[in-house]
Amino acid sequence: MSAQKLVSISVPTYNRADDLDRCLGSILSQVAGLEEFVDVYVSNNASTDNSREIIQKYLNEGYPLIALENPTNLGHDGNLESLYEKATTPYFWLFGDDDYLMPGMLKPIVDMLRSGSYGIVYLPSRWFQGDFKMLDAEYNQYKNFSYKVVTDTRDYLNQTHYWITFLSGTIINKSLVQDKVKVDRFHGSMMTYLSWFIPALFVGDKVIVETTCLICKSTERGGYKFFNTFGTTFSGILDYFVGIGYDPKFKYIIEDNMAQSYFPRFIIGDAAFEKENYFKVLLPIYWKYPSFWKMLLNNNIRIGKGYIKKYVLNRA
Image (tube, rainbow, N blue to C red; front, side, top):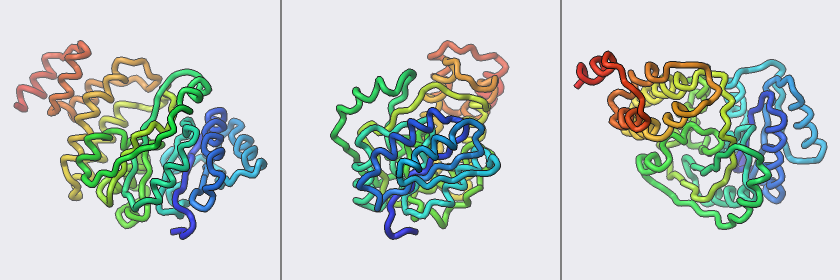
């Protein structure tokens, strides 16, 4: 690991030139004075738009940006895995190319990372639809950066739960989990990063930042099966870690909160994902969670008698 640098901020990108411009600008504009602690990477996954020109603009302007160009598309997971392997710093921060680092946030985050050897850090985000510029003035008012250190994994998860799936909102200590990680264990799942994130839950102290640090689009790009990914695939990944000896309670806390407050907004909303029978996908996993049935009732979702007999009466 590099003795001089502390954290790698790593941005994977594909065909989001406008978003990438805003994202890189929000990060690189805050690096001045922190160069000895921060590496900023961008990995262009063979984009066919003008992403390359956006990256070159920042290089021409002299920003300390490490630009990686994939000659062929490595896929979503392959691009993330490549960035993880390139990083040489103790802390690793994957940063989505359509997210935005709030002004003035990088220095206190770096100072916080310097204050201890933490396993994982949670960063709060504000999600919205509209023009990012409208939020700059609103959030420039927040000057007091605060955080708390949590020693217990269950305590951390009770407060952050399914946010473990959010790239930009999680910083992990790569130096503490390296011997526990097989980088491509979940390649092809759209969640390869969980092979690094989840082990970080169980090493060292954990940090929950209390100040909003990120601005993120709430408009979903879609293009994949959401409920299959965040239902079936995610649950299978959690099962893997329970199967090798991780605390089973960590899976329950995450999935219970998924049923309570994560899935409802996608069931009710009109996100641009591939069409799925969400009930058929989620029921085999979530039938044992009271919060799942409460969510269905609260949202007036009708339940067929056949499902009730198979998953409730026969398993009671």
